[in-house]
Amino acid sequence: MTALLWLAALPCLYWTQGVESAPALKKAAIERVCVPADQADAWQKAGFTAVPVTDTDLGLRETLASPGLRPRADRASATRSPWVFTNGSRFLRDPAGKFVYDLPAGKAALAAADAYA
Image (tube, rainbow, N blue to C red; front, side, top):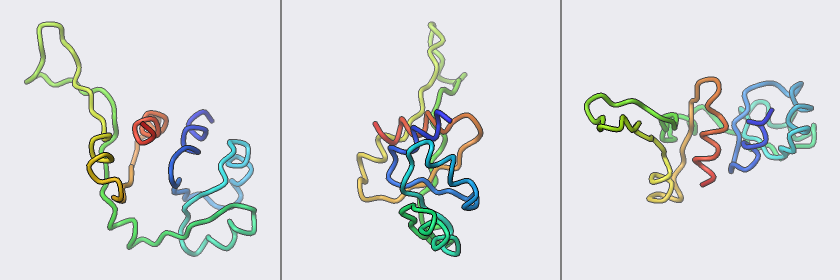
């Protein structure tokens, strides 16, 4: 549930679940969702600002790697400092760019913080 609160700060949350999941989004104070084009009307009737997104539009977005810590044996120091991986520089270099995260479970809050920062 905490991840949903972080996702509310993002420009658009692409939500693939059906409109039956609307109560969970409302509880997290999410009012704007990007949804598959064929579901946009149902989400608007449920009281959301629904942005229809086609498969073509998703395919044109740059897929970003999941942020986090990655051990790099070839670049390890004497202190064994991890390699921190973020996407913030991509957002700064191309503010008008269109990006998409395809995240594993448990990484949504970190990705939201990365995009927000």
